[in-house]
Amino acid sequence: RLRKYRCFGTLMLTENAGRSWREIADYVKYPNYAWLQSAGTKGEPKGIAVVQHKRDKGVAQSWDTDLDFVQSDNFFSTKSVLLPKGNNFAIIDKYIFVAVANTNTEVTLWVSTNNAVSFSIVRMPVELAERSYGILHTAEQSLFVIVRGGSIGAKWGNLYQSDESGTQMALSL
Image 1: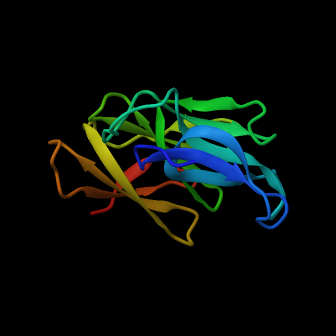
Image 2 (image 1 turned 120 degrees about the horizontal axis):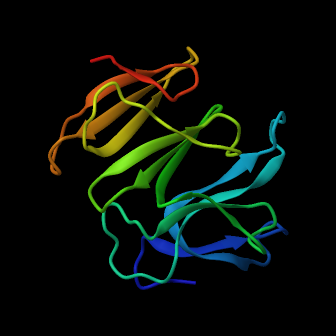
């Protein structure tokens, strides 16, 4: 179903190769949805994770405290909020990173390494106003995270490298 505002929509499901579709979740932020994998398996879905608005909303803002990072393992017959105010997420190998809106201009980065069972805040080595992130994968059991901080319009950031847990960062560049 088309919505007036393109950044939110309805998540649809087909179980017969596209012959028919059904709505399973409304107010989903596009393109913030993905399959979660069952612990210890490759390819067997555990459920679906989405960024979902609490209600139908008008024009989107950069960071929105009315969004939540939610999960369902029964196609949204029921759902659970994994992180309130979760605005964007990235699943990279064993890591699930979620940007959580503190305000409409500042965010905090959270990480899970146990398939969304629990989340920890990512600690930066210095206190700064975190505005946005870019996450780069490595094959070395860590990641690089670009953190844009400082002024709201900042076009640059600092590069940090994570420890294996993804929760501690060290300034790299």
